[in-house]
Image 1 (tube, one colour):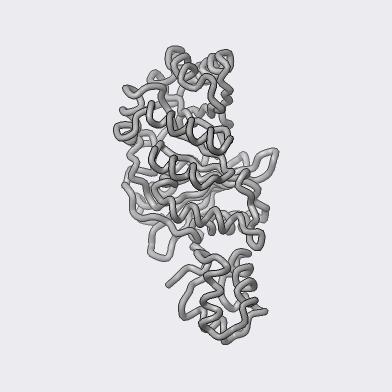
Image 2 (image 1 turned 90 degrees about the vertical axis):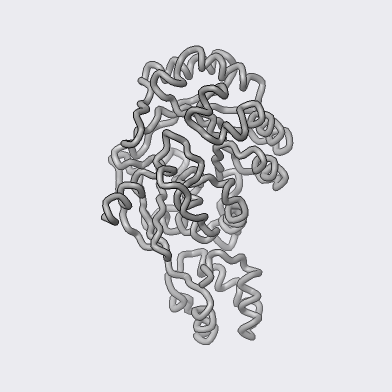
Length: 343
């Protein structure tokens, strides 16, 4: 059945008309769905006959909370069970500016990045707009906090599920729902160049984050198969076009891997690539996963890399590591849960 939280108010309006009910009922139902109603019985100002009509065609049940882990720094990681038996991860983080939630857009991932646990089992399926939205909604409700920022950087490649992601952005931005503005939302991509050009045409005010992770094709192709389809030169050309069209600064994600992409030569090469662009480099010490021999850079190498970029005129910062003691990076909790037979 259709997830009610997949639907915009006007789409709910079509169901309301079919039921022979007045148009204003659509707004009531939309608000209930967006505020976290767990059943149609929760919708107390909606006639029972209309609730029964909707229950025959739609579901409003939330995802099952399979696991919740809370780190020493307060970061929360959620493992949600979906209606078809798949599971997905969400991470809730606290910053000075408020609470940020990192959501998944797919169950699994087909990008094949060697340093990421999300992709080890391949892509199972895309999430629906409502399934992405529910991660924001129910993480906030569980923690009793208001979410102010969203990062589409969990399991999956958002631009590989672009239609659902675009509709999610409409839903979460709606003032009758969570009302989270585009400038408070970041979307991360591994570098699907054709989709970056398509996203540019949407003229959104979100922040585009590009997972770069290497300054040249020789290195990047070793760790990111997508680079064999769209090499660094084509990716950066798309990024320059995106910035020119949207006037939005791009954030380049760069996971520092010991002895691989963290050398001073790599830092200088990266600075040359990005010099003069409206860009910010987000440096991340690699999160280790059991299946990979790759190790994170040392604190000293990380700071040296950052200093070279900044001195070269490229703004760079080192991302604070949150939830390190609860496997808060992408895919680790889901993979362990599946490997342990759902425990």
